[in-house]
Length: 365
Image 1 (cartoon, rainbow, N blue to C red):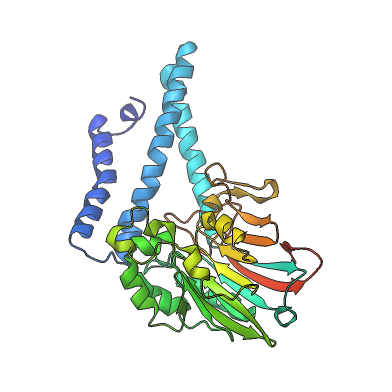
Image 2: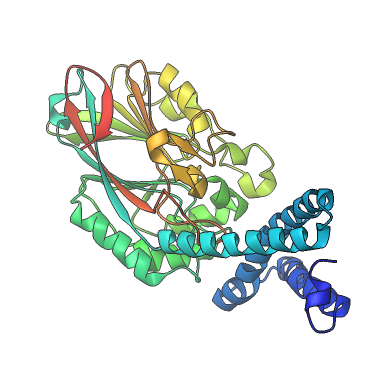
C-alpha cells in the first residue's frame, strides 16, 4: 500500500522482493540438513544481507503502520505512512553505518582489581581477557591481527578466553587457531565454553581446541604458582549445556561445586564463567574474581548511564560488580555476533592487574 505504487511493477515487485529476502532461510535449512559447513561467501553474501533485511522489515512496517494511524486523524494516512516508513529506513541505515564503524574499533581497557587479602606473590599479576570472538571464515583478519597484537603488547602473565570462541560451527575453530591460536603467556592460556560453542557441538569444538596450546577448563581447576604463592584458575561449563543443548551440549553443563572441588580451602581463586548468571554461586563459594562475557553489553550501550540493550533482560549485564569480597567483570566482547554492529561498546581487550589494597574494588586504571 505504501511502497507498491512508487515502484515499477507495483505489487509484483514488492512480492518479488519479499520472496528474495526470505530465500536465505531455505538455503540455511538446506545447508544444515546436508551438514555442510557454511563458507565465507555464504555467510557474507547470503546470510548477512538476510539478517539486515529481517531486522529492518519489522521496524519499517511498525513505523509505516504508526504513520498510517496517526495520519488518518488528519486525513493524510498514506502520506504520513510513507514519511514514517522512509524516515525509519533512513534512521536504520545511518545507525547500521555507525554500528559497522563501531564494530571495527578495538579498545584496550586497563582495570585494577584489589583485595586486602591478596597473596603478596600475586601483587601485580596481569590477566588479559578476551571474550565472545565469534570467529569464522568470514571474520576480519585485520581485526583479529589487531587483537593478537594488543594481547601481546599487554605482556600478560595469564590469558583468559571466556567463551563463544566460534560462530556456531565446530570447524570455525580452524579460523580461531589461525587468528589467535599462537597467543601465549607465562602462566598459560585458559579457555571455557560459551553457549555458541555448545551450539556448534561442544565435543568436537573441545577436541579441536585441545589441539591448540591452550588449557580447556570445564568444571575443573588448575593450581598455578607465582612469586612463591599458589592460586587457582577455575573454569565452569555453560548453562546452554543443560538448557536445550542436547547431545551438542554434552559435557558442557556448569557444575560450580565440582569446579571448585580440587581447590584447597582459603586459596585465592580466579574463575572463568562465560555466563555471568553463574557469578552469584561462585561468590557464595568465596571466589575472589570472576571473569565473564556473553552479554556483549547488548552491542548497544550507554556506559556513562550504566545501561545497555542487555540491561532490561539480565540482572548482571555489563561492567563491574561486587558482592562482599567477590568481584565480577563482564567483558563486552572482542568481536560481534550476527551483524557487524556495536554502538557505545566497541570490541575490547581487557587488561586486569591484581593489587593489594584496603578494600575489594575494581576500577579503570
